[in-house]
Length: 274
Image 1: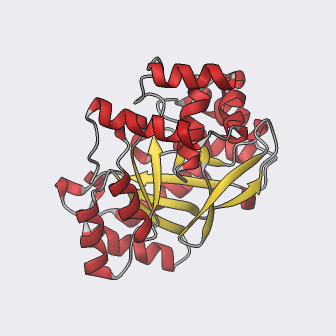
Image 2: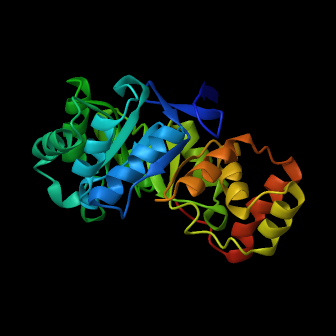
C-alpha cells in the first residue's frame, strides 16, 4: 500500500492502485446531499484535504458536485472523481457517461462503476461498454458496486478484464476475510460505502479501544478499514466532522485490537459478502 501526501488535517492518506490509477483510500461521499448543500460540502471537503469525491447518477447531485470541482482551487489532476451508472441504464451506457461528464464539468472521471448488478446478472454488455470508454480515455478506471465474487468472475471470463474496484457495504460487522482475499487475488480494490452507518459505534469492543487510544469509535472504524487496505468514503456536511474523519489516517491500531474488531463479524453473524 502506497501513501500520498494530502494537505489538511489528515496528513498522509494511504492509497491503492486502482487499474493503474492512484486511488486515495479515504474519500468524501456525497449522498444524499444535493444542490447548494452538496456544492458547499464538496468545496469544504477539498479545502480540508480530501481528494477523492464519490458521486453517482442515482444521487442526482453530479451538477452540484461539478460546480464545486470547478470553483475549487484544487487542480483536476490532483482529484479522484468517482461516479456510477445505475443498472436501469443498460443499453444507454455512453449517453449516461456523457451526461455525467457534462454535469461534473470534467473531460474524464477517474473511476466509473456499475452501481448494482443489472437484474442480478453480471451485466457483460454494459461491462464491454465500460471497457470501451476506458480505452477511449473517457474514464481512467472501471469497476463495480455490490458485486459478488461469482459475478466479478463472470465479467472476467467474458471479457478478460477484472473490475479495478468493488464497492460494497463493509464495516466491522460485515468483515469477511475470504471475500476480501478473493478480491485481492484478482487485483480488485475493496471499497466500503457507508462504513460508519453500517457499524454499531456503541459496541463495547469499539468503545473500549476508542477509550484506550483517546479517540472516537468513528476514528477506530476508519483506521481499521485503512489497516485492511479498504477504501472508505465518509460523508458529512460539517467541517469539523470532515476534519475529524480525515484524522483517522494518523491512528495505527495494535494487532490485538485489529483482531478484536475483526471478531465483531463473527459475534454478529454478519459474514458473507461473496
